Length: 549
Image (spheres, rainbow, N blue to C red):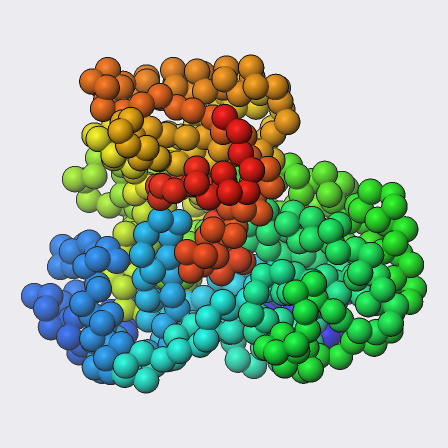
């Protein structure tokens, strides 16, 4: 009944979104007008000659230069110090930290206007879930929660940094209702470490036989959660039976303080179901017979991590997520569309053509099917013509609005000695040959650079697989040959400036990858899967946990 009420509350926003799909040019003009109003009268606007006279998309492109995280850094620092009206007239309510897999953290200013733009995409997405899949209205859902990993701080100017729960992106009047239909309490995010967070999360998930939806970002997040259930299953069954919760690391101190805010009642029947499932292979539907949908990244590098999820949850439908960044939402999934649909009511979008970077960026209604573009974003949070660095391909149109498949990062290029190796190229090579040469799809595969003096730098491929050594060596040769098809890579190899690719076997690769990302400051639920990590040091990290070459 609650979920049916939620669907009714989301309907008006969903209706406006669906009406806009037939008129993307008009919807985008409205977004641009909203962005211009948000920026009018600010320090940013004063720097742009002719900005008060801008009305159309073409005038906007002529008046405003492209921006990047580096180009807005000084403005962000001014806002953090407490200076008002820097990027937007509206005050900044909080900063959200955002960091790529190898870059420094960015601080994205969040305003009420920006949150409203998120609502314009999240509401129709959630409405579509509840409408197209009525079974989801029959039970609670799990939306991935991971520990914050650090105290929620404030900037020197007193602005909060970070939000506790993902529900903060939904309209305030919906948040209490959403909290009541979540299977796992949001307080789990306050647990100080990943293992205790996973254990408590599993307690609440196993307790809910009627679980209907699981939504995570990285597919590996769900696989690692199920691995933890396998490791701690018997202990968890005992806890369920007794109505207690004892995370493996102990339940004292900060963990105990968080647990004291939760209620754990005896669940003897669910304890029996868990024990039976552990004996028979731990498959998702054995624990959650009403589970009908898994939502997760399925494109680009995440595609390799989907198959292990299918093996854990055979027969459960998987829906790919859209492209959502801390800066804004680009696409949202709809069941009737061929690929995630542009969030045409949320922000103002432009699209660069990688083959012609000097050309005027195209607008949403000018995109062509089959073509690849790089996304520019302008939002009511004050980011104007902001280069996200994400590559998308037009898979078709839903009504008149483009449907975009995420391909990977356009700006993820490693250049140790002039080889200019891009993440997109690495992903293409691994996707085309790794499974074929190995004879199986590895559960984890990632390439990264290494500096091993006095030898020249080189790239290492870390693979979680049990194939014979001969196949690992064959995969190294095949990948090296493929990369040498690129002029810059081949030239660096011919000069001896770059060493050959080597393949190193790893164990529990996804788990240890996650552990290092957390050590580098990322939250577990936000860690993106990657075929290509530009940070070195992975050989030493995996070696401490078991590798062979």
